[in-house]
Image 1 (cartoon, rainbow over the protein chains, first blue to last red):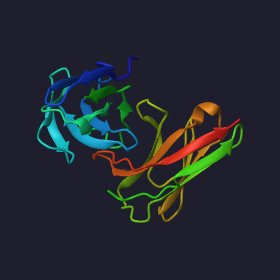
Image 2 (tube, rainbow over the protein chains, first blue to last red):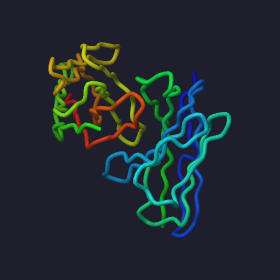
Image 3 (cartoon, rainbow over the protein chains, first blue to last red):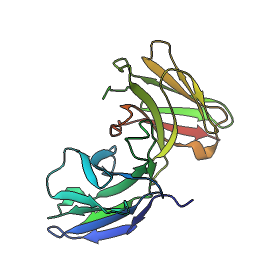
Length: 116
Length: 109
């Protein structure tokens, strides 16, 4: 069974640009989570989508946004990139939280974003 | 979410059992204890979770005290590949995961 996949693997952007990161969850999983891990820091929760709806959002500015598609894949968009947005962006998936309240999250390999 | 307290770092000899403690003194009755680990530059990996009873799977054992204020993750026969940062997280079933700073476990050859 294929795991969570993310694309691209690496990305280099300059300040002020916009970026879109993509995530495909494990087949059958309807929840997708996004996390940011800046160098030397812990994982910070960004967004949670379930069944196409945004369920929760972390303490990030509105220029971080996303969406979930009918096939449950997801995109994370970051506008007006800043130097401190350089980080590993991780996506995780789990079964629907309405039916699997104890569900663990399965993480993808991440996208490493560098902002110059 | 209840907060957790873990040692910053630990060493363990290869082949020995690694015991990683976690304090979660303010845990609520409906919060689970989850353990994840993150090997350098990879995404976190789920290890195990439990509510009240001790749990065991192919990776590890989870011992939860009777008052649920602390727990211990046990890797029975540590290998070099177990070197990672281990995160103890308490969470209600339908909430996001909140990662702390974790314990950096180093397995010594």
